[in-house]
Image 1 (cartoon, helix red, strand yellow):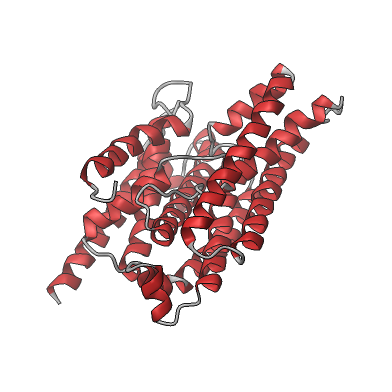
Image 2 (cartoon, one colour):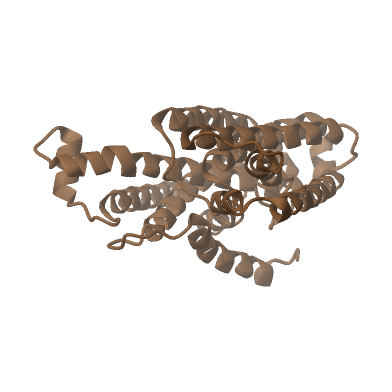
Length: 340
């Protein structure tokens, strides 16, 4: 009873931090919006037109995207770390990010190599998201086909890492032969951004992530069994092939959606599950999975607020800020973990 009360208190604190960081994200930016005007804009009161335009056209869509991305990547990282029993596993360890990157690289730089010009910015934005999704899905499909022939999770991990290395080499080759403008667009995509999504893209991303979350919740029992190792999980009747398949599909829906629409965002997926474990002192995924999701959303919205450089016209790439948050946590894991 005392432990449950402690969990409730911690969840309340996480929700409070999430609310505070979200409000700060809406207030702060190149133009600082008064909280009173924001409240009036939400309630239909007398708010300046410019405040409503900035709020509903820019900041709210960006905040929603950041919240979804943080939660999705964190839950993804939690499942990967449990599946492979590796504290440094992240959502992209099996090459999903590399597959998305290859799709975008072919779309942006492969076409130009054959003299094909992308006609408009609108088509380019749609094409980038679609090509990233196709690339991520193709890699997942290949891994699913191969996983049935692999005897354990370590073999699957090695295959994913090698596949990512091969894809990275192909991307480097495309970069070498690409036009400077196409290369610049690709590099900007790899830095990550939450500020380019239209409402329809946010809805698509939301639906895919919700499906990924639902599948992740369905995986909780098997994830708990995997905490004691693959052999122990099998002794409890866990079908490892089916479990791997479900986790891979959930990972693709979560990490693939974020990568397709926002670019590859690093470190959050590694760091947040460990922060959740430190906060809750519990390995049960019934506790960890929702805690990781809310912590991830909270940390990502905070990172996006910092990236906005409040009071300045420029912005920092989100990957820069996420690295500053994630790297200290990863170093702590390396120094403290007995498994490394």
